[in-house]
Length: 193
Image (cartoon, rainbow, N blue to C red; front, side, top):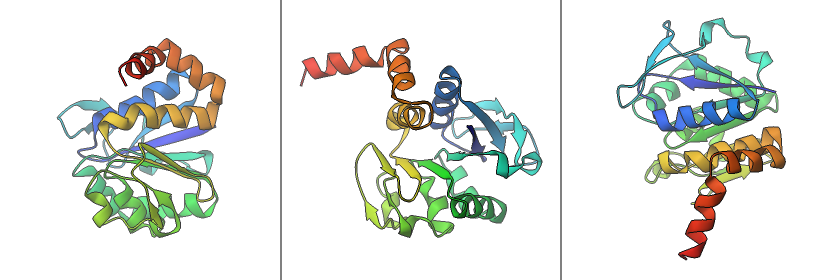
């Protein structure tokens, strides 16, 4: 299993790095892929991150999953980038998985995929992204469309965990929850409900 996460100019750093970090902790291969000609990328909050590869240099057929973090202007930039739209459309048509969080479902809308799927996004974005069925759950998995979506920076933890569970299994996800103390956070919150 191999994943790529697309990094445009102004992506939401928490959403990108949470997925990358958790995948690598779980032993899953994920490449940070810059959509520009440069490997250095800059997030929405001016954090500089060195990508592993440039989009022009990757063989898309080697990837089972494409992840798009949100953030502005990255989500709008990628939704208007024909190379990205072609990549996402061909990946979807090949029956492979896509995962989008926050504002990045704008890419799914521009690629004509949102209307076929159940999904969620950052509040207000649903006015532009027209899922077949919009949910307000923290993470929405549409097995038929092979699509996973989530709402925003605070839900990145659950988005990444659900992706790990889907691609590495429930045991790997539970091990990760324990290693990161997420199980203790959840137990603590349950005690205050």
